[in-house]
Image (cartoon, rainbow, N blue to C red; front, side, top):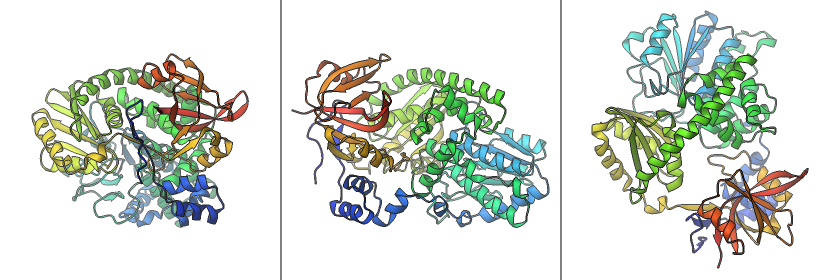
Length: 584
């Protein structure tokens, strides 16, 4: 069935309504006593009949994986129990992004609850780059630390954590990045994506793996009656950290991850973590957070620390119980994020100029000199989104370049980067399907580019078409609070469980307001739905905004998501216009 629209949209996208199995939809609707529309949305998310009840009525305990199915979990827990019992000092090295920071805060707080001496160190993103390094390892040696954890890093740290200088230190890696066929020679490696694993947990973020580790560790400590009843860590209260790291690392919100995020959002309401609460307060957010808030409000501010200045600030904020310290860090993160936006805008413009010249290729490689390393990942994400092609953004300082890569659905970019490293085109590199990092000598940039072009030849051109997929086409008359309830039953939204998108017809523009000189608030004159209104963010001075302002009388169909909003004390649906098409 061809559900493509014949023309391109105002943003030059192709529109396609997703195919739906109407027989399955009817069956789901009847068996579970739900509306046809909700059944259709479930079917489009590939939720099978036997999964529907659990999806709509999630049971947290029933959906927590058994930690001990992971290789090295038992071994790692036994070693940690020994360290706790014998009062050994424990060191933690964590990545500087949100997944790493939340993993660090989670493990640090658990170990502190056992009265263990813990030393946490975060690599300097701008000076040292990703993963464990010799400076940190030497500091741990000087502190007489015998057991070292690496969180959200370590799987590809050959020659550092397994260096002969540290052979009397036990290193436990807790990670989720794709491994090579060989692994660092360390005490143990807990990673659902290590090459010899055979489990279905590969979509877990590092913080999810860390949570399973603490779950198993608490179980073993209980078995030896380590805790007094009142001293046992309540791991349920750490799920705000798990949800935050999971959403911000853009992993698939499948069975387990969705379970963590749902429960984690409930924990956010309790405001247990004063650092997270202060960021929300500074951002003037006075409602219960959604998964989108984690990704677009919390995530950028926490990441701003390592991108612009001090990599350790985000983990300090998540760990601290000192109100004065938390207030200082939270305000600093907000300022750093504002600075990050200015830097990002300038580099994005330069990178986009290069990208436009490569549109006939299936992968985009752009680079510059002394681009700020802290924003390369964001630039790569924006270029990938803009052109629907995997992109690699590299900044060279003298002859060495640091790069970030982002991919699109159906292309495992992490594996391609690993292959390039094995063949000698990169000094270092690794990651997972959708995101990777790399280090390269400038003399190899052309060979690396040729390698990429050759590797991407096998992909069909249709994968790279800029297509916007919509769940359903509905009339304005179908937009009501019942529809909102159906949409909200599918939450939380994120990678692998995207927010429903609708093509909406039957609306005529009545008038508009410009908000903050960049957003459009649009009012409609609908005979059946007089209160309906919409907002189109950042659309002023774009093709979309200019048409909506100057061509109000045209017959439009709108590509939208639908939110709940409070109009004068009354809850109403609000459209978020992402695109539009003029219908002849």
